[in-house]
Amino acid sequence: MKYFVYVIYNKKHRKFYIGQTKNLRQRIRWHNDKEFKKGYTARFDGDWDLIYQESFSTREEALRREKQLKSYQGRQSIKKFIPR
Image (cartoon, rainbow, N blue to C red; front, side):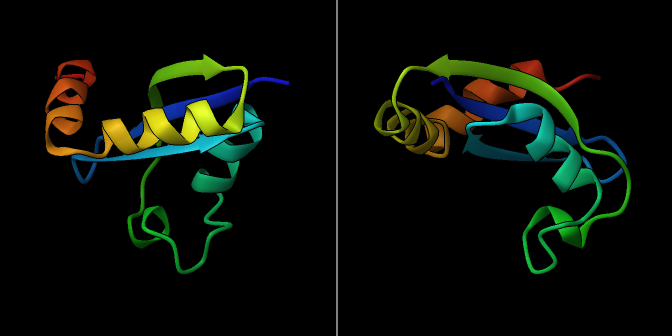
């Protein structure tokens, strides 16, 4: 089974979110449908678009990479994928 680390971007509010999942297509739909009522992405209206993804064979690898991307250096590296 594959696990994904992903970055989605909300152009209207110029915000991005980093997460991990087994089902990338469903997870992005959930973010856009505000399924996570108290979650970070539910705070912002507008669409969340996938701007970056990586796949891993284990959840442990995906969690490790997610943590790296959420660090200061990881967030700085993600900024190059944000559409202008």
